[in-house]
Image 1 (spheres, rainbow, N blue to C red):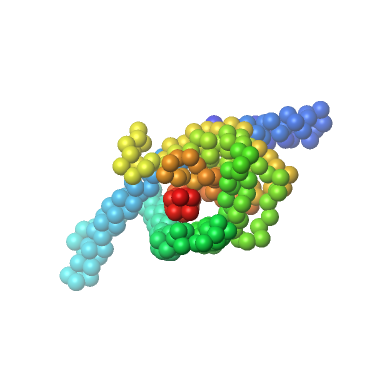
Image 2: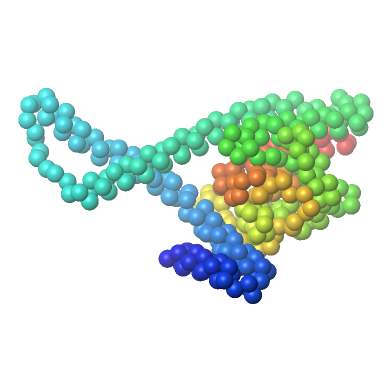
Length: 322
């Protein structure tokens, strides 16, 4: 009901603006920004409940399937014995409810099938990355330039492997922002190769989505960059006990996004790259020209990619900087 009221209010405001030019563009922009803030709160709430809901639907599908066998067995028995064992006719509203439930279950199973397909791609990417990480040996390199080239190749291969997961559905682009000597995050690697970003884009820790992700060590998701608001996402680690169990937690981050001159995307996901000493290296960014492109599963995959990059950095520091 609240959503309907807000939508009606916005529509009335737009109509009124067409009739009265005294309503300024800035006022309308502020209202739209508040609407985006409201949507971020809705995202946080929905992602918070969709995990338990998905499990409930999966279990419900099994129960519905079990109960659906009853009329089938009765019909089969009637065909064998030549007469019906039970005579009954369901009310129309019950039949309609069964059809709606069947459609909902079919849709849920289709979405689960897509998730399984993404997990298969993730498994392929991880298998490739683990091979690459296991083969990293910087101690055999004779020069620093050779070591850096080897690390660059590893980064590119990781980005390429995880890009395949997002390519079919989102066509997302990936880039790595590293902390430079001036304590600023700057883009150092991009995939697909040739992707263009603002060459002047740089952020201090705590500034912008990438800077906040780097400083606070959690994911930052901006569903629509034009409204600037985002969500801080904390993913529980294996064995970690949180109030939500194994589910991620979400926190609203108003005005977290800082605009740059060249923005070839509409939504952004920034993921800190972890290292053993927790000193940090930089941030993995995923962006898409689709608004609200990423979901909670995409965030977990992106965090896995960042961890893979961190493995390469730790090995580089352990072997090459002795």
